[in-house]
Image 1 (tube, rainbow, N blue to C red):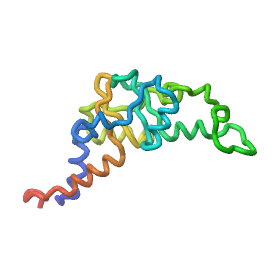
Image 2 (cartoon, rainbow, N blue to C red; image 1 turned 45 degrees about the vertical axis):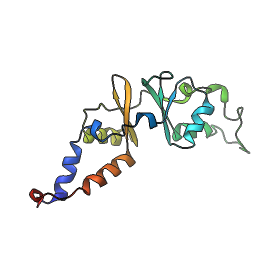
Image 3 (cartoon, one colour; image 1 turned 30 degrees about the vertical axis):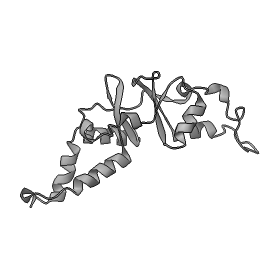
Length: 164
């Protein structure tokens, strides 16, 4: 069997905890009571932000993506002029806090689930990122870009004699 034929099945069997981005301190986290201005400041550098229960907590309660913000920006009725957004044009009172705009209970995976299970969830639910959660606390994430980087590194590992 050629190395290429073995790579994907081997990659699929890796546990999420061994492939996830473990840098929790570097994850885009925000508390559900944070103001929308703080949410937007984080989204200027990230395409998503994980919402946690409170400051210092890792209990995950939601996610806010660029798409969620696009829904806010999209006018429900056709308007003749949509100039620069302001609090009134964006219906500010309906989303003052992160908890108002987040998608609740995002799809998640456990640390012991295999890569193939996380990928299947991502495909079925049409998502590009999945948090790795244990006891309701976020401990890392797996993103599509992260998987590509990890698979590339997996492919580049030296071929062992038994792989010939």
